[in-house]
Image (cartoon, rainbow, N blue to C red; front, side, top):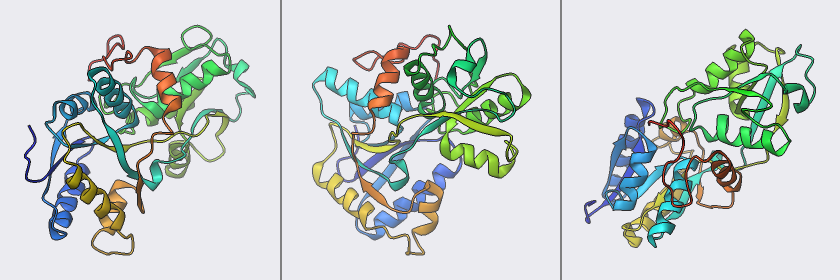
Length: 287
């Protein structure tokens, strides 16, 4: 069980910078009088299970981890809550991209081709865009073949490698389309992975939300409230915290909300990734 004299948070080590981020936050929280510590996990499935067992009070969860935590908690008669998120976690979209010279102008043109995606557990580069294609009448595995890029499996797409490889598959001709979050489409174009003008957006999903801090059933309410208040007090103008916010990819923390996870909930059900109790049911998934 997590120590009861301070707040213990779980995070997934998707990159070496994660240690720098949370060591910095730990020092800053100590300076504000909050006893804070963190535990790193190699994958989100393990982290969610630890949260429900009370081994950590709060988890920095991917959107897919939130879906699982909510389902597991509901099945066990427990409560979890999204208490905070980044400004950059709100109102995101994913895109399905084709080569500009492909001659493909609508999703019907994908029929018979291969669509490149990220890792099997990536909300933004696999689950949500494939669900979007289904909603437009294109059935993955039937109307189109799906080419996955299983990099960082268990990290729910936080490792950008799968999306980058999907983009490369599009350029090489292995695939007629590639799925990615819209921000990474811009990133890949800026860094040269996708040469300027070489691709075009075929279709774009509706907006959805990304990560949140999830408070578990063992979380002390007073400590969580203090944690959230301190997050909200962080200023991007503060030279001490700005480097940490830059590493974590935000300018301000916002209150947690759960209104932006409907697309992912539907995608999880369509793909059979989790069942209604949060059990992992995806075939062959080994985080």
